Image (tube, rainbow, N blue to C red):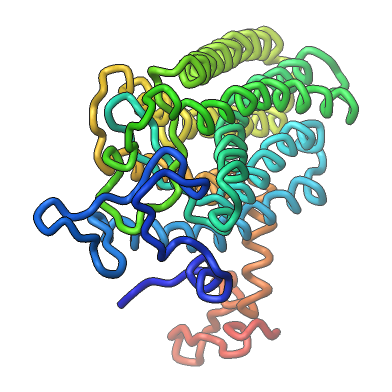
Length: 386
């Protein structure tokens, strides 16, 4: 059974070149074109995708993360805005940095839905979201925007660590404008990557004149527009060097600030109440999880895959799987944050309790003793009535 999504439905109503064979380079696909079958010399009738199973899984994953990721990210955003009180309120703006980053990444990822492959020193990308209906130049822009959001998941981390370090050092947290300034600094370094990424995806295909980059892609016909980052080009080399540098510097700053924060808290441990200590422990776990996720399921693996370009290896579907995991960040990050931070967890459980009509109830209120001493469940208590 074919799997349809929003993009497939739009393809029905909007004219496009997706069903057209392009035997030569064109504005639709300037660095790749369709090739006839080696045996017959004819083009394949209809659509052909050599990794159709992975493509179907990719579409399902994208649909699920678009819906659930939006719900989870918006829920955490609401909790941070309206349920950061008491000791936690001091760190509300720090958590807000994470929320904004998750929301923007979710929005961009939902629009682009990138499918990738690394082969012969090239990172090749195809957009499968609604942005695939735009021009080739626009698709290169959206690919760069997606790369920027992936980088933002890393560059925002030093800002969060600095916010916490400042709050531990001082009695007052950073002001709203100071927090906004931290966000702008993180955004600035992510924008630099986008500026380097655009010419890489738009022009690095010129490094091999008259070469058909479609031969490096999965066997697919008609061939979709391919965004090419050929690392024999100076554009792509600058792009990769900056990616690796941003990764190393960001995590280095996080490590330094984390050590300073832990030492400072240890020196002043006697000054903190038990409630403050519990909250600090929850924040430590939250920041650790937010630090490890990009390291293992998004930016880190992507950088490793890109480094493989220098060895001209064919990663097969591995790069596709890596970005598939990255699309789950707007789901995993908010869920883990809500679970770790106790006030958020209690609020969500309270919502769920009200939603189901009080099915989850205290044993003392749902069990009554009968005359012969046997426990009997109260129907009223199960339904949430007293």
